[in-house]
Image (cartoon, rainbow, N blue to C red; front, side, top):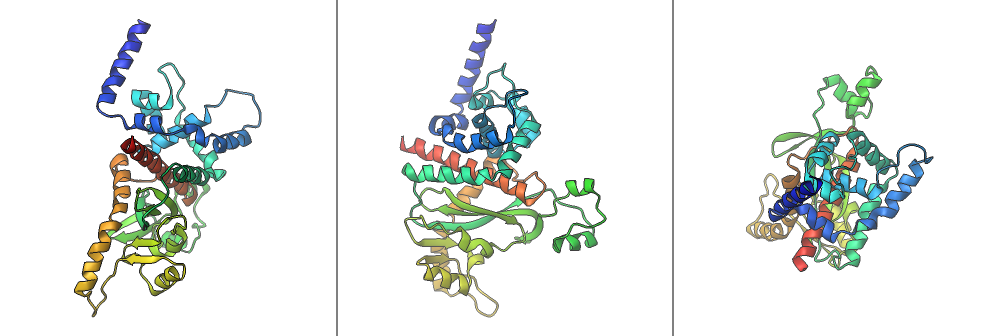
Length: 339
């Protein structure tokens, strides 16, 4: 019976592979041990004694966070999917009889990484790996931002005024405060209102890999983090961005630093764009649109992009993991294309 069960599992996994399992590609091209040093340092710091159950392998837990980020799964959902999906179990190196980390364990591991500031280090380590293995940032960079929604807060006008001033309403109880995201903000885009955060990123033109990112609340104007995102390591000094980033100060600073700007122009009341300027926008848009591939892949794989956390520090952790997971997946695609 046991042998028949193993044969049936292999048969099912074969059918999954025939339909194309993207997680197989990741395991083939990613050396997961690359991340162990940072992960183990956190584990050693957190574990004060050897008493109790042995913790799950740190690299396996990191892979749980990767697959969770790729498919935008809540902690409860990722626990269920690991139990339910053979492809997830195989990706993590688990068998039917192995123990599966529950939602609380996943949450605690991510919190450990967040509190230790390790997620940013993992992102930087993989970026160095990319550059050392033939995927340096090339042909210029594109700066843009996407809105990451958070569950909308239903507050009174008085409560919202206090939050805008950076203060939690003094009459809120500790229990209520734990359930409220006091860091997320409202913004408007395309005539629609959104509540949450912004994922500002720098993507290189050649490989469409994320080279840097910053997370803010949704009300922060894109131009506020523009210069912080510029990648000095790119082989080209060309920079593309949409019209939200255009200002005299930004242009002057870029030129002083040796960058060549390709920022979209926008008309103003009483001064419409000339035909030459419109043509220039169309030319720039062909390159700038490459960053839309990044946003599109994240949205297509994960569905409705929403961050299920409380507070900007946890949002930064979740969004940082999402950006790292995209780079891992993109690297797999690039490596397979070169094979």
